[in-house]
Image (cartoon, rainbow, N blue to C red; front, side):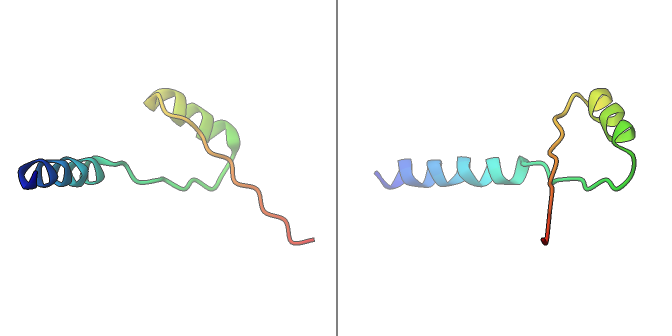
Length: 51
């Protein structure tokens, strides 16, 4: 049982180590879209309002 827990922990640690970090782009949407298409990645839009 301890071996299974240690192996699971090792796999979880490896998954976190391989995770990608977010890149924040500030500029025209067209540039972000072109970069995302080139790298075959998704775009996350974050909107904020204070009123």
